[in-house]
Length: 233
Image (cartoon, rainbow, N blue to C red; front, side, top):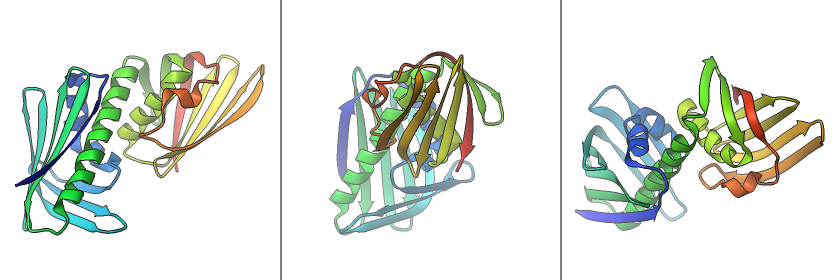
């Protein structure tokens, strides 16, 4: 069996990781490659990588296993066995993609799977931990958020993207004397429009949602309580 590993800094905890990986329906819709899942365990799954020099497709049945701060997706199909696992440690997240397949360039494909799978879980887990205590759903597509700062916006966007299962949406926020609107298209954060009594501003971002950082909105003076509405695009 061939394997590839991706390791990255991590600032959340195992409980946040478990919240993400125990929702494979939302996670598969949020991965940076084509992934589909349906039914109940064992789930029907399809994974498709499209790269300039190669492509990869896998179809099969998937089970999930948990043990000692590790989650494993075990997929069996007509082509063989594919396993994706994630482990959370102190300050680090490790993602592993393993396969027993007759496949050309398998190592490169496993590298892409390990990196994309790990980065998604890392970012969504960190954003969940940062936002979950601040946000409260109030109705269909509407939320109330408290103690929101500009540095929270990347985490808020990732939390909503994961929950919606949709990579294209607009987020509008209304606070005391100010409003903002953020546009996300195909998992790319396009821009933010902000209006307050002190004036208006447009921040051009144009970065993939998984790569957007707190520094991308650091020039905005956001703070306090907001009502949010989300529009799917």
